[in-house]
Amino acid sequence: MVIMETTITVDKAGRMVLPKEVRDELQLAPGDTLDLVSDGGLVTLRPSRGRGRMRKDRGVWVFSGGAPILGAETDRVLDEIRRGGRGE
Image 1 (spheres, rainbow, N blue to C red):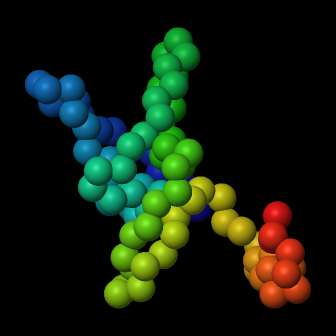
Image 2: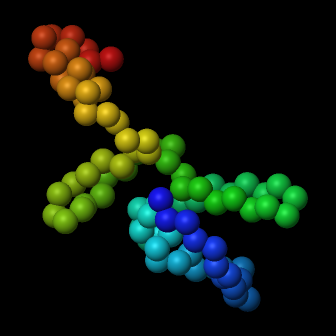
């Protein structure tokens, strides 16, 4: 996790640029959306991860759906599917 403290500027249209290090850490790409929470003098931005999406990463399509899934969980689901179960 990148810990950063910096100053960013709001332009006339109300836009701000997130530093590249932050965009990379959060795996943000053009068109991604952020959820904003304002509480008094504190503003929190976090990536909207409610909907999974596919994106190409070094030529391979990768599903991005939020929290990582443990390998043990994927192995369990695949084993169940192979045995004829539904994998749920």
